[in-house]
Length: 152
Image 1 (cartoon, helix red, strand yellow):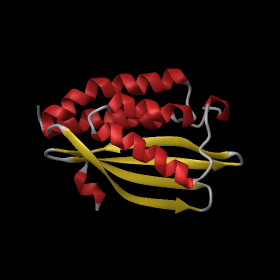
Image 2: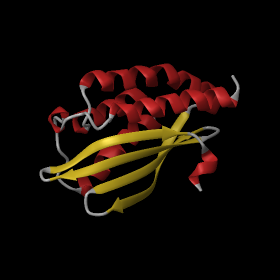
Image 3: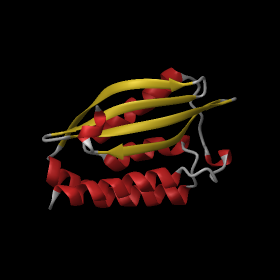
């Protein structure tokens, strides 16, 4: 499979993840709230631990209770990930771990955590975007891309 085709598939997955957190989603969709930034870090580390071990679906499911999207949209994202995981593995090799890259705040209410999913022959960037509500932090959206040149 050509590299461009893999990038296209990953871009589609990222687009679905972004669409899944469209502004029309209500706060009522969230089942759990993260009380502080330490809990936010813990969630992203747990997600990436599963993803890095090759359990993409398991990692995604850890995020679900904290996301501001309806279950049906989340399930569509999981379905797309199931289709693309074998393509990523074929192209990049086995998923072999994860690495925390950075944490950025935008004001007092928006937090972005960036981590890498490490493969045998490549790395994919995971960006998690959190919003602090009056009750705690929720996962507004996440993005996955493998455009290594854009990491710099």
